[in-house]
Image 1 (cartoon, rainbow, N blue to C red):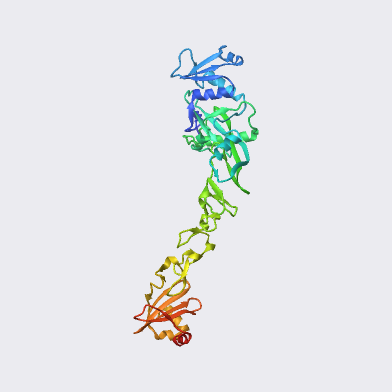
Image 2: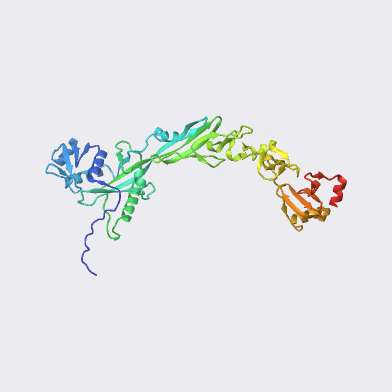
Length: 440
C-alpha cells in the first residue's frame, strides 16, 4: 500500500440558480449588522461605527469595489480581503444564524384580508372576517462563495420540513428579496437551527457538480433564518339570517381568493346569493320559478314544453306523448285517443301519437299481449300501432270499416273503442253491448 499523501481537494461550492453580486450581499449583511451602507454604481460605501474603524486603519468611511472596478482609493471587495474576513467574523459573532424576512410579504391581518374581501360579491348580504391567525415559519438560506471569488454569492433555500425550496417558489415567497430582523426575531431553539443547517448541507452536497464522495462541500459564508408568514382563517358570508364559513390557508404572500363552492350545487363562484330554502349558493346557479316566484337552484327548475316558462316540477306533469313536462293548465284531451296531453303535441286537436301510427304484424309482442286479454280483436287485420307512456293506440281495418282501440299499458283495460267507415272522418264509440261483442 502506498504511503504517499493524497492530494488536497478544494472544497466544492454547490451550484444554484439563485445568485447575487458580492456588493449586494455585502450590503444586506451590513444591514443585518446595523452598519450603514449604500450601493452607488460600481462601489459600496460603508459608514463604519467608531468601534469598527480600527480594523481599517481608523477609516470612518469605506469605499469598496471588486477588482474590475477598483482604484487605489478602494478597499477590495473580495472574500479573502480584510473586509471579507472582517464581515465573516462580524456575522459569526451574531451566532450560527442571522434573522430576516421577505421584504414584500403581508405582515398584518388587514394586509391579508384586504385582497380577499374585494373578490366576493354578496347579493343582499355582507362579508366579514371570522378569524385569522398569522404565524411565522422558519426557512433557511445558506450562502456560499468560493475562496478568492469576488463575484457572485450562491444561495440555497431550505423549507421548514428540511426539503429544498423549488426554484419557482423562491421568488414567489420573495426569499430573494429580504429585510433584516435586528430586534426580537421569532423564537427558534438551537436544535431546530442545527436540524435546518444539517438539511441544508445535505442539499448542498446533492447540488454539487462534483459527485466524488471524497470532495468536501465548502463552508457557507452565512446562514440566515428567513421567517415566512403563514395565514389561516375563515371568512363569513351572511345574507339575512343565513351564514356560511369560507376557510382560507396558505403562505401570506401567495394567498389568493378562492371561490366559494355551493354545498348543494357544487359550483364554485365569487358571486353569492341565497335561495328561499336558506342555501347560500352562486348567484348564477339561482333562478326564480316563473310560476311561484320562489328563488331556488337553477337545476331544480324545468322548462314547460308549451310556454317555455322555467318552473318547479311540482307545477307540471309529464306529457304521455312527448314525456316532456308541461304546466298542468297546458293540457287538453286529444280528440282521437282522448288522452290528456300537452298542447305542444297537438295538431288540429289530435296528438302526435295518433298521427304517427306505424304498421305492425299480428305477431308483434304488444298485439299478442292485447289479443290475449281481448281475443275478439284478433279477428281484425291491417293493424297500425303507436304507444305513449300510458297507453297503446291501435287501429285496424277491414274492407269497409276501421277500428280504433286505446288500451291502458299497465292493466290492458280498454280506454276507448270506436269505429268509422272508410268514407267517414268521424269515430263513433261503441255502445256497451257492441263493445262486449267486439272484445269477446
